[in-house]
Image (cartoon, rainbow, N blue to C red; front, side, top):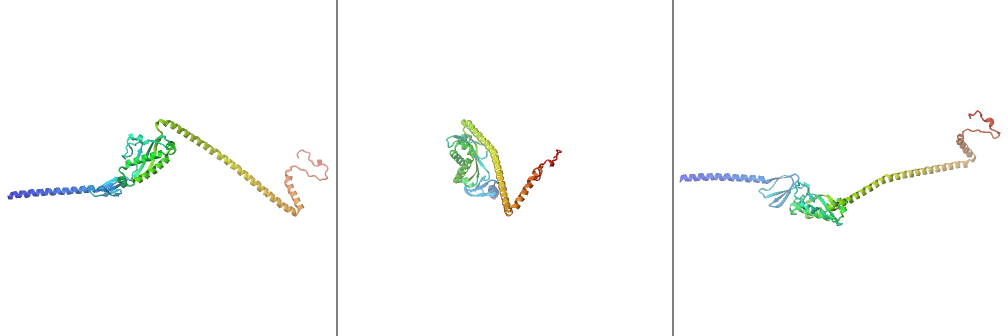
Amino acid sequence: MSQMKNVFEANFNDHRIQLRVIMMGAIAALILVALFTMFYTVQAESQGVVLRFGKYIKTVDPGLRVKMPFGIDSVEIVPVRRQLKQEFGFGTAGATNPRQYSSSRSWENEKNMVTGDLNAATVEWIVQYRINDPRQYLFQVRDPGDTLRAVSESVMREVVGDRTVDEVITVGRQEIEVFVLQRLQELVNKYEMGLSIDQVQLKDVNPPDPVRASFNEVNQAQQERVQLVNEANREYNKVVPLARGTADQKIKAAEGYALKRINEAEGDATRFNAMFLEYAKAPEVTRMRMYLETMKSVVPKMGKKIIMDANANQVLPLLQLDGNN
């Protein structure tokens, strides 16, 4: 009995040691799992949405973070600073966003549209957007990517359907982009999708293939017309301003000449009035002075001259007959 008791006690001690080792290993494993599941990292261009048993708790910024372990808390990483895009009517290979473009079988249906004047057009476009509210993006709409695609296509068809084919293909492209952007942002806010629409860009906009050649001819004719009008305007701007400048120059010269003549006439009148006042004071003296001043200015211009006495009978004795004078 004593020997069996000793064997039993020895086995019991061995099992107790093994159980203690197992428990310590389990505790160590739990600690490691807890440490492994407590820490997580949010990338620089993202935010983390923390969920506790699937319920929203908070939104955290980039960096090393701590959460409740063992799956009590889960984290959804949302790229809020990355610009995302969706393509309609075509697709770019290698896209990381699964909602960037639809299947190639849907491209024809996406881009074929009817304009307001009942013409057909093929419209390819891009919507660029960001996630600005991770909570709304994850919980307010079941599939925000597909919802955004549906809303974008609906708005584009509405806007194209209100315009003529010429506006859609040529002159109205920028206006369409602005209007679609505004309308799309309004609907995104209304649906609380947590998105910010950065840009709507029309890419390839053309008439359908059967009429594309004819439309291109019309478009080329319109471009040639615009070119001819621009050339005519350039020639007009070259000639007309020059003619106007010449006319203005002549008008200014005539105005200057008129002003000069007026000033001269006014000066002559003023001088005459002053002389008349002096003449009224002493008529004989003034008349003699005027005569002498006139002769002083006239005689030097007469050239060779002979002054004779009133009683002289002839000028022959006074002439030099040598031919030099």
